Length: 340
Ligand code: KG4
Ligand code: ZN
Image: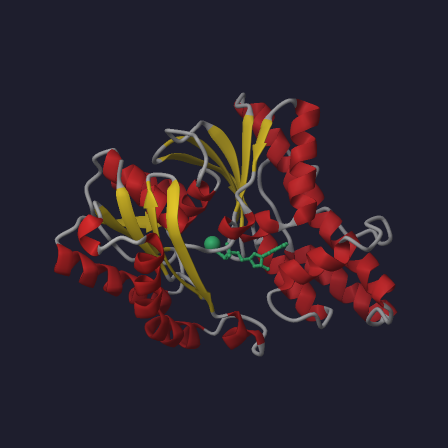
């Protein structure tokens, strides 16, 4: 068993958590949504400053909630990238300070590897099961074949916008504020997904790539042509149709990846995995095709440190060499090569 404290500060959440392997002892997330909302997106400089103010209280709170002291820990972990460099620096320097003060080993964790572990938190799996991961966040949309710890193969990714980015930009266009995912998700539940025919980009291509920038343009053209929806019902129809276009492509490609891989398991992870339409459609595809679908608990879909701690614990138990190197855009399978 490894008891690990981890820090996550790659974007706009300052987070610290303590886990015992996959069991979460505490998970504290201080969101900066209020700071960035009025700008319609994350402002990197503001993110760094707020991480700096938030990091110490968040670490203290995680230790208090778990009822453990630094001397009770086996290792430390921190998100080393990808992310905003100034934001990453705050978490990494705090973690390095803790490592220096305690002598504990410090593991740098790839942010997306953390998201992979989010689906295993508080579950009963001992190792990382073989599966296809649909990784959908604000910055990434990828299908990854997972064969075990550090054994990741990228099957395909988005050529332009990420799914979460499409939600955020779509919401901005509709005047719904930031972040866009939760509010569109909420409205979509009341609307008719067949009301408007938004494009399902690349759905017929026999690959695992995605493209969402055309969908954003289609929404813009729709608003230019018809004006902003004037009633809640009309807005709900636009949101439901927009969401259907995203979910349909994601699930179509994910189920094809599962079929091709011969694996019988799909994990949907990342901030967009909180989407009710996506969760339902993925589960439905699993029932139809006979594969297991795992989605993280809602509190572990968005950025958190528990997932980073769990990945760090797995690395510690596997005897990996502790090392931290900040990076802003290393792909998840490049990370594997670097560490192996
Ligand atoms: O993983 P995450 O917290 O941060 C990144 O690593 O990017 O993902 C944030 C993204 C945002 O784009 C947000 O709009 C989206 O996840 N999101 C959702 C929902 N909740 C958050 N998208 C669709 N439906 C949701 N319910
Ligand atoms: Zn994330």
